Image (cartoon, rainbow, N blue to C red; front, side, top):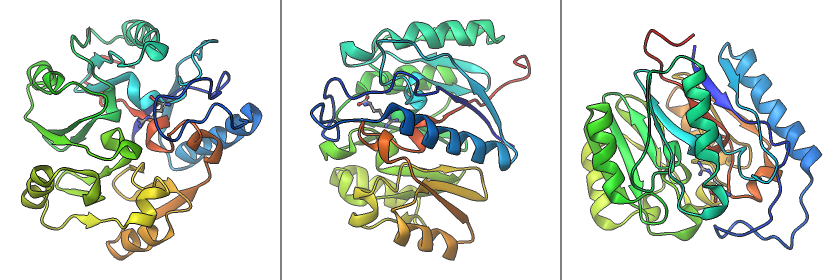
Length: 268
Ligand code: ARG
């Protein structure tokens, strides 16, 4: 069973553009965004997971992308510091939520740090992206805060501006990624760390297929990533495709909407 934090897209809209997927001229349908999001939340509940909710706030249309709010390991929460001013007020909501829910070790990152958008926990190491959002200095800060080794990976493609749009963790020692999203150095590092990794193709990456959530057995991913789903099935996972087309207009999908709470003992 996993424990997730999500934010209902009650005020979802594309009012500005801070990634290549966002076109404020394209109409959005908040009602449809909510329905698609509810489908994802219900799926997690059906799979036996626990889902906590953080209240959305008017004027913060990107708040639905909960993955960006923090990184939580062993009950310690490192709260985000957003690169763009539009999202900066979100940090206070996360800090307050963690404080209210019994997390004693809550700190806002000193350097720009977009939470699980760029920090992916893989067993006893953390994979950390930079290149577009998270400041590489935030990698060292996270390593010190959590007391875990952090492997820095550099992203090169603006459509894959967060690590969680280019790589997903499947198990402590298994990841799936799209190599072209990374510098050559980072690709080499990934090959060394994960010789058995699942390599996604360009079409699935473009369909946001890497923005997936794995609970150890099921992999919830955008339904358009059909070839990737077949690759995962071959490796013994159960892929479950979902349609989050509205939320894709903001540059996010399954993983972006899901912050994993890896709790210690004190939190309920
Ligand atoms: N519009 C949001 C942004 O650009 C999307 C965030 C997607 N989240 C993620 N974890 N990749 O910040």
